[in-house]
Image (tube, rainbow, N blue to C red; front, side, top):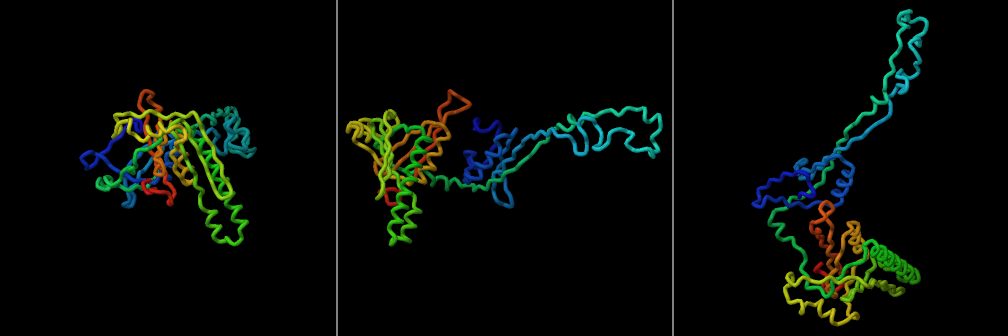
Length: 322
């Protein structure tokens, strides 16, 4: 809380003084983006027409340097006027004594350089969740993974994955055009997202592969790190852990999962957080990513952890766990 807010106040009827919210990430992300250059931003849980919303009030300061309309900023006279004599010869006040006064120039450029505060309010609809509902929300239960490996830079991996997906889609489209009899069915196949095979072993290798009837292409990374497990965090002795058996089986023992290319591409966007990512693969069962996000404001603090479990294709075995 101290990392996110300079000051906060929360009051709830729950014993733990907790308010659980469900919110759409799209509007919330846009609101945060609007506050990027703000001087101050406040976030309040309130109601609009009986609907709970997170209301973000953003204060920004805009500075204008243009002169006021209708004035010449350099001289201090109304536009089109050159002197007091501009009233013409029929001016009843144009006496000799009056003409002897000199007009005092105004620094209108400085006067117009004023700060204006701009206040923007963004309302994000939310659902307030009852504690009983929150108790039913939990991370999916998966078996112990056979392989855990530190992924290469995610933006690099995403570029390769997107390239493979485009090649697979182009190959499927070309194959459909050659089979005229598959007209309507071919359109459905083209619209489907390709499936990528992600494989890794306990000897620092990662393989990304896509295979269709017309195309097979793969890319392999070597020299990656297989982090050591903490025996204190395991429910079994380290010697009996599946990853130990995979390590002992040698570099030819791979754990593989199949993921939807479109979903996988979205997951890899988390690479913008610039944290290290550990992939845990339960062979033909599940893929779990642990994203360790560094604390920017406190170099000595432990990294925050974001857990991502991308869905596998519906036809994969036991894919319902993710």
